[in-house]
Image 1 (tube, one colour):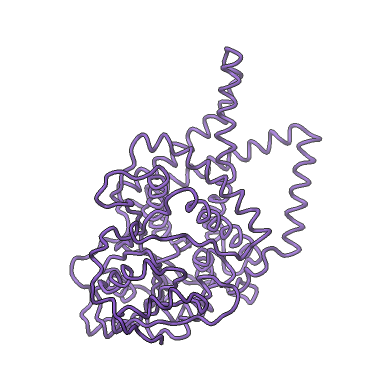
Image 2 (image 1 turned 180 degrees about the horizontal axis):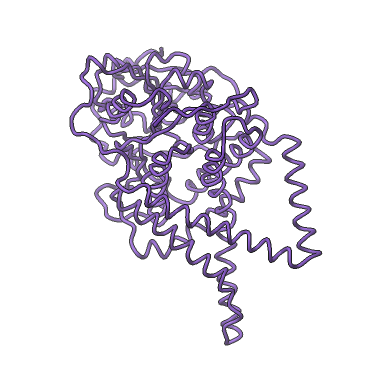
Length: 478
């Protein structure tokens, strides 16, 4: 694909823009839209009907988009090769960054998984980035024998205390030509770096980032059972990383990056100024800032496995942070038109926009259907059927379930007919997360709700942690 030219201006979003949640102009526009819509519906009933029709038309467009992504993603990401793509003499230096906070229990298995990366050790440049006040994690990290290429880096005290701020600190020291980010709970395919290096070698210079697919595994690999939230969460990930992102990459569209397993040309990442430390979904923001510079994003085939968040008490804060970050990113990127173009705006609307609006409306839609049938049951007759509304919701539900089912099959996870029927219940929980996100966006816009990780979930084979990783003397921080 030929390089895409984009007009880049100083008004384009930059790191730190999310520190301002909404400008006065944006607040004024939102307030005027809310007041005008409410007054119009109250004074002129036909306005409500027209608004409902517009919402239904929007649902139809989303349905068409889902079907388009299913067709465009046929074949999934580029096929992985079973042998190294480049000889060792041609491999670039690779920086690996893992930002950690309050992860004492998960550190030993994490080191074991990082050691399993199949890449020449003398070409690896790794950093465990820890917070200065997180003494327990620092002490645990120093008590482990780290690979020769991996060092401890302490982020200096300061605000905000977020993952992207820690990543920016590591970016100052990284010595690689390429850079990837992993999370504490990640289990990346050992050949993922080699695939990314080969893809960068053959790609145009404007291809500056590749996203590896993230796949959710069961709580226990030895068990065939997992909880309701875990199964739905895994299917949701599969729909995104096995269908939506590969389709958007094939169509040459920008997309929000996942929070981990992004592979960058480090020169481009530095030119962008790194991550926005004030955005709690810095990955989503960065994907569209890459696009605004005239650069492109692609996808890999070698996956990274992650555990599900688990029970509702862990799932809800994670989804709240994601939705809050989506709203942050939408507010930041709608302040400037620089470098977006119609494809950029379409991609922003069809990803972050649709995800936010859908989360807000899921529970209302399910409640509306339940009330309709309950009133019909109480009246002992079927009320006047709003065929257009019911048909749109039914078709939209079918398209969403189909996307999840196909994605789950490609990811090799189970998504049974019962899971498909129960999906609207899970989607309704997203409305609860959206309500939390909206409140938190106002009250605590930059608070980072951390997901708790446990080694018995992340790595059930505790005995697999090499004994040589633990030492008595510890290791000094770099």
